[in-house]
Length: 252
Ligand code: 13P
Image (cartoon, rainbow, N blue to C red; front, side):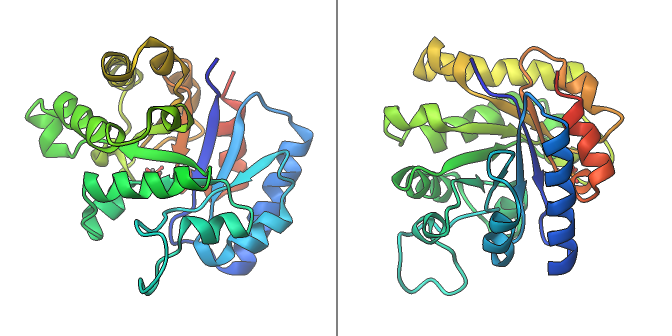
């Protein structure tokens, strides 16, 4: 059985005080409204330790937004998997389209980052998704297929069961334009078929595939009701407890 997951990617938002407040409010909500979903929040790296200490880890998983591709050494500004592990972080987003776009991260770099995470038993939330021009040119299937295979084929087979995939079409991120439930279901089912062809049916059926891109309190329920959508990776709407709690409640 694959897990249902609702993850909030806080990106580069919130002061320290605001972040602590949000983490506390969310902890309070989840403690009183048990959910079948695993709830994950990903604050900026300098808040990770404080937020990890603020929330009850039985209720909320605290994730990093990224990880270094290298193990250690002269990589100014980077945070390694070992460093995340040393403060008790066991989940990290990797391959987000904003990092692919602004930090020019290739599939090969993302594959290295996945390897670093596996070495420390940190669960990756591995992001894929096509750009608007790729969708308009009807290339979205081939784009997500190559993103999945380029990053996952180099991995040791036994590590693949640990991967959570987040399909986030770039044209839907922060734009208020969501993929329709039918569009999202279609490509989620396709991603699962790619996993099945490359790695077998058990892996395909056991992998959680989250949808991300303008998920909000109004559209979450219909998206999450699709058979191949196992939850969401939420940006803007994860920054307010009123909205994020409704999205968590939308998981049935
Ligand atoms: P929005 O929910 O703000 O569109 O962001 C989605 C996202 O990029 C989550 O990682």
